Amino acid sequence: CFVRGLPECCARTIEDGMAAGKVTGDADSWQLLANCQIAARNLDAALEPLQHAGAMGKDGKAYALLGQIHLQKEEWKAAGEALAKAVAKSDAASRPSLQMLAGVAALGDGRLDEAEASFRAAAEDEKTRPAAESYLKHLEQKRARQQARNEGPAAAAGGAAAVAPTASGHS
Image (cartoon, rainbow, N blue to C red; front, side, top):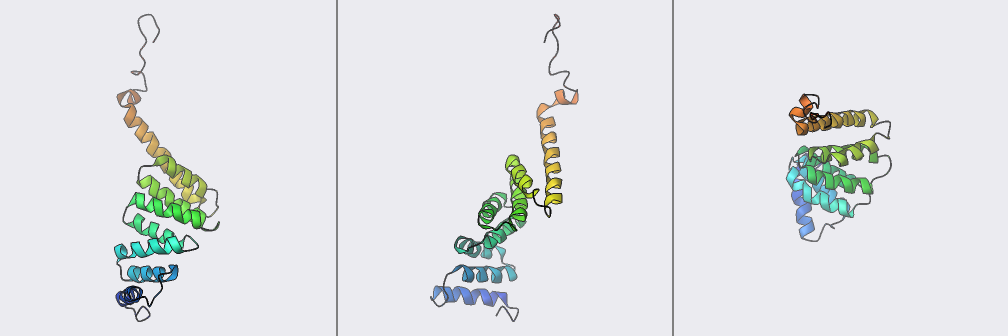
């Protein structure tokens, strides 16, 4: 089915085979089912098979794909969880790009310290360094805006209103 360009048929065939015990429920089968669902543009239907493939797989590729789908759907927490598992199972060559994605998930979820740690780890690699440094600058600007909002009018006045001296000259 998949070869003929019918990913829905592929997914049904694998699901039926698993249910009947004709297809083993190993990491490769779950990954193939997820790939069929993705090819059919059924991203929600690909989530569970990717979870199974990730748990059973030897590397972090299924978890990485699961995290990427959650990122596309702006499901930041779920993306972060999947990407953390991907990082833990990944090889050294894959880790920096996964750390970048984990940083994006953490940033989207408002976990700025976690995002910074992920981006700093990704910046250690020359391939991901430019993007990681760009995200770190964005993060710094975001924190500055938050701090300015939190300080309110005192920040806008240069802090002069925050500490006014008393008549004796002491604040």
